[in-house]
Amino acid sequence: MEHELHTMIANLQTEVARQGDLIRILQLKQSSTKPKPVLQDPEKFTGQPHKFDTWLPSIKAKLRVDGEAIGDSVAQFYYVYLDLESNVQAMVLPQLSQAEELESWNYNTILEQLSRVNFNPNKIQEAEDKLLALKQGTDSLPAYVAKFERILYEAKGQNWPDVNKISTFRSGLNSIIRARLSQQLNLPPTYPEFVRVVQQLAGKSIPQPQTPTSGNGSGYRSEPMDTSIGSINSISPRCVRCRSQDHSFLDCPRRPNISENLVVDASESDSDTSVSEEADYPTHLDWRKCL
Image 1: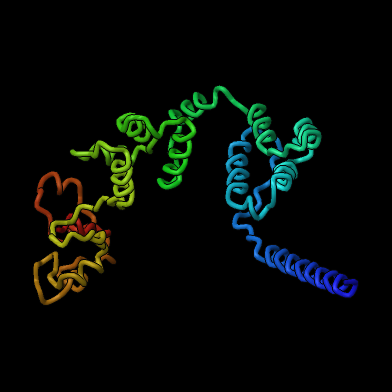
Image 2: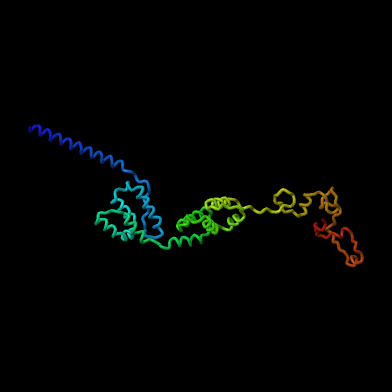
């Protein structure tokens, strides 16, 4: 009997050791299969009210997606607490003391406290005023659309009637796009289709005014005419003095001798209005008069 008792005890000890090894293997396997975080850690909240609206959705998304990777409720509570700057941590110290005292680790107590502190009762009205005063100016159309959509959601205007959204969106466009819209006979009544039409009109290039042609029918701008005497001779061989095609204007035999001083007596011009052909041409010949 004593021998059987020792044998039973030895078997039980062996079974306990085997169960212990099995537990350690399961724990190691569980720790190795722990999920990895998917989202990046959000930036720490500095306490500025205008940044709270972006920090709150970020921290909620992190806890919703990577909550299992962060750990149990205690780990999640401290994760939220450590994602705050020191001045904001001092603000939620009562929530931390209560969690340690009651051993109730609910991170929502921190988020609710910060929501009450950063709550703006005039937020929607301020967004509406900002939306009505929004102007495109020199911004590109994609930048204007992105800014308009963001402020529209801040003003809870995503459920506005399409006519109100279109009117507000159209009033903020620059004068060029508004002028193109006024030339359209039929515009879509829905806001998404209206924005698509505006994007198409904004993508068109602005037509450049064409210089009137000189009657050649080619549609191209004519170069200015060279009015120099040399240019006239190069265009046509006809002499503008005697109309001969055998020589140019500069080689005309009827050209007056500019070395001589041609003086016309005033008395002769009074008595006889017909003067010599040579005297009709001054020393500095004006070819326009000849033409």
